[in-house]
Each structure stands twice: as C-alpha cells, then as structure tokens.
Image 1 (tube, rainbow, N blue to C red):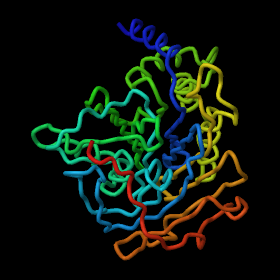
Image 2: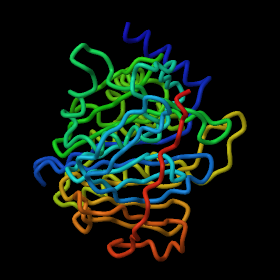
Image 3: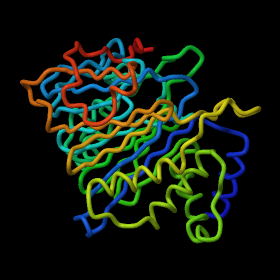
Length: 352
C-alpha cells in the first residue's frame, strides 16, 4: 500500500506543478536549549509588493468574507509580512507563535456555507497569530464541541486569473508544528513535532509518503529539481543531518542555509512549466528571542526586527515598514524605521 501511494504520487508530479515555496522548523538541540527557528522562502511569478507590519493586541478584526464574516479581537501583537497590502502570508506573534502561508494548487475550501462564519484567505493566518500563544492551543480550538469546523475559509482571485489558494503552518517555542490544508472542502490537520517541513503540492500526506522513500537513501541520492516534492525531500534530509547550534545567530544561519539551498534562482519561466517561479524573499523567525529576519533575493536587503522594540500591547499602534524604497535603507535592525499607519483591509472575498 505504501509503495503504491509513493508510485502514484511520483507520477502525479510529472504532470502537475505549482508556485514554489518552502518552509522548515530547525531545532538547535540541547547545545542551545532546543532553540526553535523557522525559515521560509516566498517564490512567486511576479513582485509581491511585500510590506512588514506590526499589529498590537486589542484590534477588532473582520474576516472580510461578506455576509456572516468571522469577527474577533486580537489577544496578541504580531509582526507580519503582507502581499499587496491585502493578505498576510508570514509572521510571528508576541508569544513566539510563527505562521507561514504557502501556495497549494489543489487546495479546495468548499462551497460557501452561509451558516458558518467566513474568513478571507488573506486573513486566515492573521487569525491564528492574533488568537493563540501555542500550537496546541490552536489545534484544540479548530472545531466546536460537536466536531464542526468553527469557520470557513473563503477565497477569490486576488490577481486576475490566479487562484488564491494555500495551506498554513504554525510553529511555537516548543517546536510543535501544525499543518492545515483544505482538500475537497474538508480541513485536514497534521499536528506534531515531526512535521518540520512543508512545500506545496501534492497534499501533505502524499509529501510524507515521498519523504519515506527518500530519507533512507539520502546519503547516496536526492531529487534535484525545483518541484515541490523534490524540495520537500531535500529539505527534510538537510534538517535531519544539519549541525546543532549554540546561539541565536548560528541557528538563523543554519536555517537560512537550508532555505537558500532549496530556493529558485532568478530565472524566466521554463517552457512547459509556467508555474515554476523565482524566489523573491525569505524570512527566519526565532521563537525564543522573538526576532524576525527578512531578506530579499532581488535586492541587497537583509533586515531584522526585535519584537521587544515595539509596543504590541493594547496600548500600541499599527506600524508599517515600507519595503518599496532604497534597499540600502533596509539593512540591519529596523528599530526606528517603522511609521504609524492605518491597518490595511484584508483581501475581500464577498462571501461568494
């Protein structure tokens, strides 16, 4: 059965592709008290107009899904990266919960159910960063007491002709991980310390089956293409064999080395593979030190943000770091570079 699943999944990969992103959770081991650092790449076929925001606790939120939109008030402050000032795709909150939104071509959130509160796909990740301190808290609050999902993710085309589809990973200071995917309209959940790697299609359980094939032979051979399943196998192998670290700086460097190793160079679209995209930027988040690192691959820009430099309490204010500026002004610690701003509205999906 396992061999059959692996074989069928590998065949599927040769006839499908998706936009490429990769994510990893790195554990320093006991040499630095099991420091947990996450890293991710953002690969996209056009500029994302990325911006970085700080959001305080106490914000009133609306899921931007039309009628019966989910509403909530943020319990925790956060630092996030937004695409097009419309969708939250990455971030860390004041308790060290990190979140990553990655493209998933075969995601299916199901037909809109008017009885369920709706949330825009652009607000989905922010909901978790606003609401939970740990992965376990989030995992235990996905369903009602009757076993029903608490809300429904709703999507539309943020970019005309491009479906806004994805899955989410969450990690906390303990190294616990939560992977959330909607397949055929049903939420699928992977929760545990072992779920340290995520890429794109196919679905996560198929990725895990492929990994079982590659891990035992990783010292002799690894798949080398830019396809999501190949990156999943390589990143899983790197994370299993990489060295321990003894400091924040070393943990970030090791995490960065793995994410850079599965990034896609600046390249035009390949014939027959229009969905293979260049890596545009990468992030690294330290869940203990509450530091958030951001690097561009298309400009000389590497910056970091210390959450302790900002008032993320209910008395704080929304702050914006514009990245569409000279890259030389976006190197190093960004304390003092943010400016007050009104929060952007989440990508509205109209409840359709």
